[in-house]
Image (cartoon, rainbow, N blue to C red; front, side, top):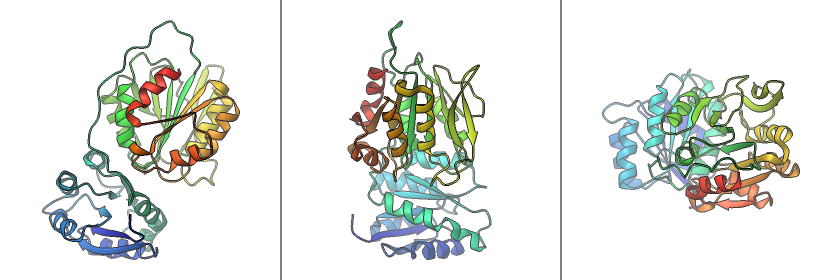
Length: 342
């Protein structure tokens, strides 16, 4: 990557193009090199200008964002950040992620106001992070590993997973490989804007042998169930008389993300102790490192995704460099490593 990240904006709204340009101008390490009014013009400008990152609207005339993504990824993969509004179809955002977009940043609904600049820090951080991203090949797997022999003595009572940038694609490659008789509950935190986690959980469930749902407060953990934290709420493990359940909440308020991987991991360590297995997959930042340290302190184990398969090697790198990773595993081998560690 060059020192300056070169960005192309693709959006049919002149106001949004100008607003995004102004937001990105807040960073001395980002240069906006052009702005296209639709997907067709965007394809031409990518070919001409060779940007490091594209920010992309989805609803545009002539050629929309999905059309742009499919054609551009087929030609030459480039990191694409979707700028979506809450009013846009969540299904459209899911299609964009499946087509190869690496991140989603949500626009405020009131575009013609100063509120649009509220996303500036998030947008700048995301653009800088994905500039070095490896754009994932649009593929999923329905291959299931062999069923787990039963009975067997388990060393693990819960699998907790933390993931961010590139996470939807990573989970769609990992979770479908796990067999229907997976013997412990799975609890996942994925950094994603509000409005999309329920749709994503449903989509992941349709391609998996496990039951995958967006977590609701009080959901009882059980084998074969994979719970995904809803955007905007921390997800914790809480032991009750009826078993371990999901607890949703807004606190702590001082985390960079809600849900936070650190919150989930720490609660799992408190409840399950040494019988916790944690996995940190692709993502920007360091969320999960403090939680991984808590899990290790209780005797649990932590696996991190290898750099070569990460879209962004941030969260796994942070935990690995802190000496918290028991195994560094490529994504395509992660399911095998998990099953072998149960």
